[in-house]
Length: 528
Image (cartoon, helix red, strand yellow):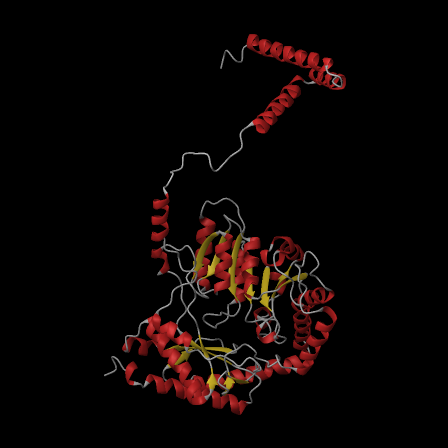
């Protein structure tokens, strides 16, 4: 180091550079068109010799790149060369992994016997199966029976005649029409926010929103019972995830406090939860959640997929039901499917957050826009919710929920985990019966499926069962057992398409069907 930094060494290096520059200039002078370039090199060297040396280095690197041999897969490298026989043996031994999670044979048999609707049957309270049987449909989210509303159907037909069926392009190219912009304005106006962005698929909305804002190293605190789309979004974000017990604000504060106390670099921090839980059916304590968000300086992502159009005086969701200003919620996500009888989803909040998604959210950038007739349908329903007709729809639905719950809560075998305002009623086996009969999780699912079948066969009532969430990809076998799974449950959906008397009668029939199954000999194990 002393030798290379000595004055004599530096002088020698400068002399070498001067000699090299003189040789280059002399060569260029002899060339026909080299006089201009020679003057440039002489001038640049006199003004800045370091610059000339740097340019010469770049030139030599360019020559090396152009003259270097190209890569050829046929050349023998450090990899192992296998014979044809060895390749054939390895191919025979290879076993591909299944594309979907394997199910037990009893559940597969249940799937094979699952009833299906007739292709021409309306998606209303009265529908028809493929075998021609007419049933009462309490297994869908068409709570206001708007899917067959004549005015909405005619509006959709008129839109298709004007715009066509689908935009066939992403929103950022030529897929945005005036009806899309109007829908975004209607959503923002309903929530009282600065802006909104719409998505063409309801399922991918929340997962795409999460991955657009949460990146590797960011901190995510999520409710343990969140739905599967949220879990996929969290997985795609590759953030640092901490879970808190479902709707337990004390446990949430414990997790937040422990994270703040850790010596971590400053990153983005989010709390992710649902307004109306898909797996349990209860409602989040939003005021308390926002208190903790402010105290510990986190952002909140609230999924209103099931609560939008249902809760609140105008169907705005949990924020309206619990008198919370939407401006205090950083990111609000909702669905245009279900009770709105349309399709797609949305995200609303501050304009800077909305505009960020237009270029960074995968489901916006790489998906075709929402079909125009679904956009006009959603706009019409949102307008209706804020009118007197919408208020009547919401009141009527709440009356039907109350009537249905009164009948189902009289059951000696199941109890309801859903909030009183939730039109999707979750019926879970009472713990004493599970313990007394020593029922495993699989046996509970099979028993409840028999209840679903009994409702259909004996009472012509179509209900469904809460399905087990798929296991997340890439989990270590020891972590699979730790993954949250909702308690097996029957799902009964209330609708305004049935009268009070019809709703009460359906609730009574469901209760009797459950009693019939529970008294069968095959499920009497341990009761003697």
